[in-house]
Image: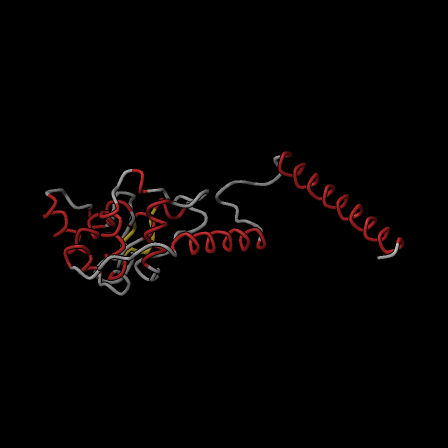
Length: 204
């Protein structure tokens, strides 16, 4: 390689490094300035949201690859999960016949509606156990064992398309087996708003 070519490469590296340093300094200054609105009622910029979604999805996918999924078809397994879901999850992730909740209304990003959305069981288990940073998704593995978490996943496999009556009955049966009191209407403890029998939304 000639001397002229070497000088061009060095000059390009110096210019690139300088531009990168300026860009990083600009980002650092912006973050430190406090101008970015961290409020949950203000959405991310489009590109920010897309980058975070990609980071989240690829992170979960990579870590869920090694998870061995147990047999989730045992009805008793799913029944136990129904009670856990009603108590721990339905306030944010809804339930059959439930269209919204007070806590869900104020969350950003909006949690998936698990009464409609199907999720890969390994992804669901990892997310339930470890949670997700800077969202309202807690790491339930801190307080619950793996068997309990898998029972929730087993229930999630049956939840999409389930009728409100079937859901409520499963929650009541789960509570009876555990000797506990089921949440009101089987919707958890966060004040979810539920459709009435006539199909309209019930009042607050």
